[in-house]
Image (cartoon, rainbow, N blue to C red):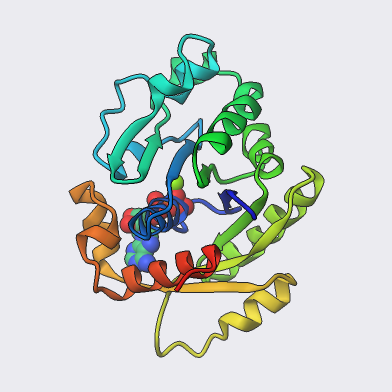
Length: 235
Ligand code: ADP
Ligand code: MG
């Protein structure tokens, strides 16, 4: 069974953190023990999505050798913890991504599912988690620029020795004439799910509450629960 997922994209701002937090929360609600980890070391922001204080001990402190992973692990709700990253430039400079392998190994042993919220782009610290995960979820909006950048993520995953599970298309529109299946088949990876455009997504970030809790019967929350259940083979 695959237990460690990396949530990745080429382009930024496509919905990786939203996807990480909501798939994780949905699986926790279904009784799985889940850890969501902000490995976007340069542009960390998962903490805000779940109302954690970014000034507390973070993954950066662990990677700098100044703390244990337990110290940077925070309970969010039943069955789910988060490991946030720091937001300061100095902490970023002191944290070495090389320690991520040990962090992932420890979390893998302690939780049913681990979701790594990976930074956009093609830097070393972005590529590393693609190889540490069992499976990579490539996230893209339908926009051509985002789809184009997904190709790089797929290629980098192969180079990192990782495995792509498939594509999640975010911010889709119900009456769009774009075929999301077609986008996935052009990328030569399976389409795992589509998440509709939903104003509650942004509102939930301001509320610091996962969408699946903030507006559980909204279209994006329903789509995230379906995707989570599909990944875990439940329901
Ligand atoms: P990334 O982690 O890839 O940078 P985020 O998850 O932070 O992307 O999302 C970027 C922005 O898009 C946020 O403001 C978020 O609220 C918004 N967003 C994400 N998914 C949706 C959606 N399905 N509908 C509307 N807005 C969305
Ligand atoms: Mg993000």
